Length: 462
Image (cartoon, rainbow, N blue to C red; front, side, top):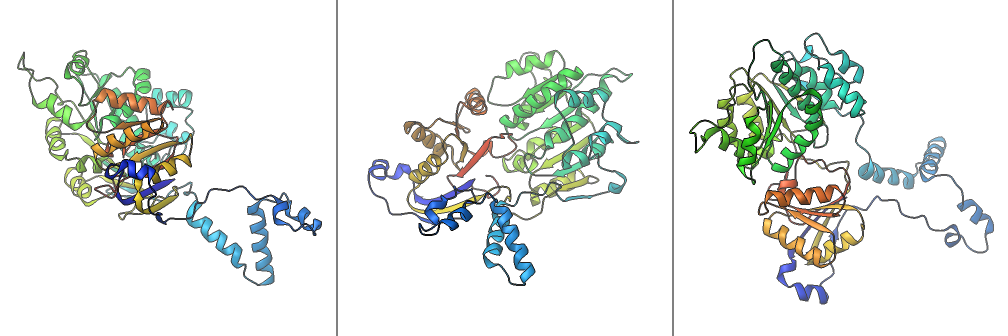
């Protein structure tokens, strides 16, 4: 469930008064909840003088079956069934699941020559132009219980393994990480076992946030261990010393945030005066969540870093949305790229997989939030705030009300943010209060409730 709460007053405007007073009744504009409610007992519906009707109401036929029978009867008699039609319309608008095979649009130079690897057998076979290493396929089959690729993976793997530039547009949670990670490892293995010796890094993955970089590193750890590839994860908010030490023993693949990597590449060591990190052998570059990266102001750092990598580089750009800023960047950096759009459009639309409510309030917003949380006990919830100070205050209020909550925002040390995320993943915390640092790319599968406590500055952020 996604709930957006908009109101004038907040907890800070009169905390004691809002808690003990009687605020005005909230005015709600919301979509009717599609959750299944308990069916009332048959006895409460049937009159006491009609026992035969009781037996009829106790029928074991499911609601879907009764609606189907009513539709068939209406079609046979030629009389429309308004009630059934109304129920079906509501069900289709609220609870219709996403199609199992999303629409895929692919265009670009020679795009028609590449066929998708949409089954595991095709992934194993590969094609004449490209093939994944057998060690990666064996790892997926043995440890990952890999059955079949998602749409973005099926179309991206043959293109990326063949060395083509790729622009992938697909929603969060569609498998983009594995879509660019396996071709990256294929490229690294090709350099490591080449006849001419060289020193890495060979592959570079740029992410907008530290949490996303750590998540990708965690996903890649098993694959790197299975293939003998050395990986380093570089991000800000922590000491540079330990990260620089990890580079002294050699590294094949980097997963970084743009700010920290730009510091290590552009600034020499203060003791030796030499460059700390060289990207001259990087031939495979991934810009993950490119739209978020541009919104956070990392475009200058990204452009500087691309000047340090090899000229014959392969760039893959992935994003969940397709704004004009990303279109302009990809047109400049990837003029010959093949574009893959999986169920994506240029406009803004609601997620049909999520039941959404909008609540307009005249009273205390925090009291409405408490009502929402109390109606979903023991369910994982993310509450988004636009400002860091709001996130910190809201987390403090929730803990005072005995809610198991934690917060992540830009004013916290990186170690604190890591600890909160680990506690939330282990279900030690049920509620996560966050700013836009958690708005994109994080893989949190057990989330059932999402609340926009404040309107985001950019409508696509939350």
